[in-house]
Image (cartoon, rainbow, N blue to C red; front, side):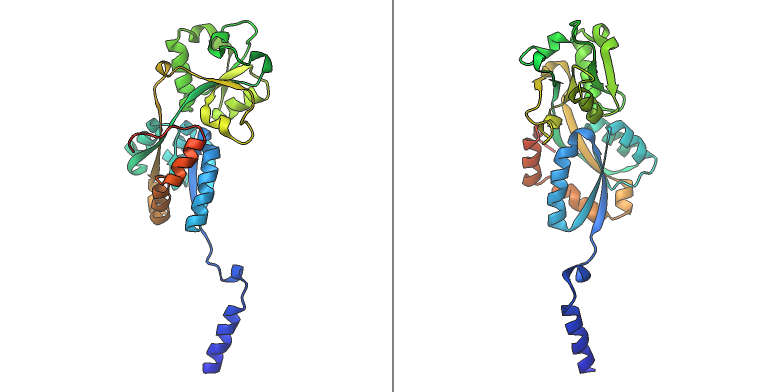
Length: 258
């Protein structure tokens, strides 16, 4: 018996690390398109710290909300604003209270060199600007705020015929980057991505023209029922200094309180 125990002990020691490693757990997170680049960095840090794999689904907050309300298997929802996370809680598909993790900024961006260093807001009504990119106001919070800014500035009726709607902030950004639209409204954070950093020219939309974009996240009911421990672990990680540093580096502001 002693011989057999020693035999199996040495067999175990001889296994490759991958053979002895406990399989990683996985959590699925629904992430608003404006947060995709920051979230990839956050997910990598979390995976190293907790040995839990993070799967990310990117989309417009409104569409992701619809999916979650219809039972989509997401442990957490990282939204572009607090309206959609609040809706999920109200509908009984969210757990506890939401956490406000960042404040986003709305910008006008162009990838055309001939528009550089000009007042992009004033150019929207010009005849040489034929197409203006805008995330869908119904599903994308940044699109909603962009339309609000245009209405407050008295420009919406003048330029609405030029507007090309993107399904999300990602698609709206692509329309500008590819030249489909001369200029458009995007989140400041997407312009800090490796692909777009130092590309084109952007200006912040005056803050008085739109409401502060408070971005919130929640644990979903599905997350509670399917690995609450890992979901809570990621929720707590989102509040750490390391995550706050990533958010600042991606163009976000931090809220005064959670």
